[in-house]
Length: 202
Image (cartoon, rainbow, N blue to C red):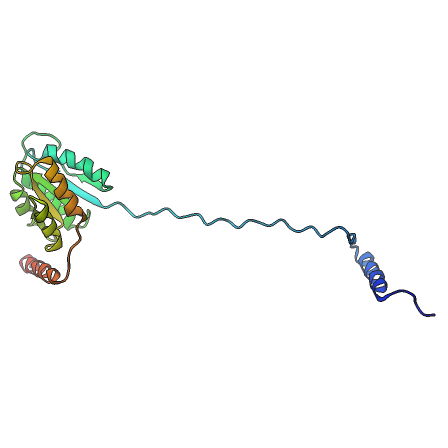
């Protein structure tokens, strides 16, 4: 006797029998299969920049103390970290002690650059240049600050508080800190300075 059931009906009956044997409760066809809730991807969190601020050592004798205190505020506003080696008052002191400490910190790589202030800036420049690895330059205007960086790659700046005013000192410091070494023909000459220094360290 031929079956009046369609293939689809037979398939459905077989499926029900299998489900019952396996203990599976079939879902009504009209009830859609629940979808698993989408798990939102973890948003990539931006990593904070960990670049350390450049450290500038600064020092002065009693004649440069007030200018040092003013320039420290400017350096902080420009985003530099400051290492103040003194002096910390207007009591008379000897500039070589502070110039040497600023230069030593630069020469050993403990700070990025150094600034030293005395009455004329000349004596401190002489002292700083006795320290290996230091190229100190006295700047008294915009051009000398620019030239000392572009041509000589100076890493210590000396200022004469008795010869320049506060506004000019600020301009010099800002120019000196922001000017890159020119390289090129100047590099060969700076390399010669370093070579002569090494000759006398033997």
